Image (cartoon, rainbow, N blue to C red; front, side):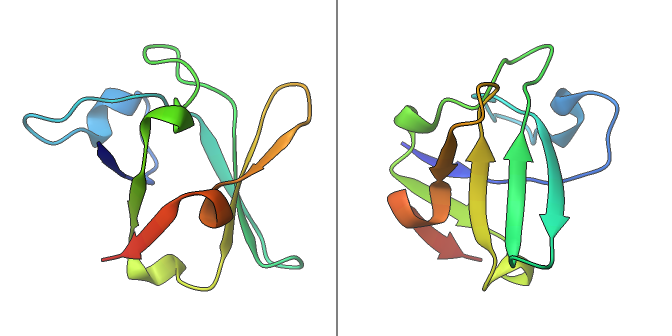
Length: 90
């Protein structure tokens, strides 16, 4: 199973889905330009927090190349997504 990281300014996460897509979680994002990271956190009301364990590969827009992608859990623990998953820039 591979996944596509979609970022967007939407009211509901389902607005980011394309026909035939399944969402395996969502949340919020922000850019930390000082540490050169894309920070992901929180959860979707409809789909819950991202289920990173289901992903082997993550497709990321080439616009974000060079940013370390990090997910921050509610307890403050961090998952270095871009280091633990195969990231393919598209």
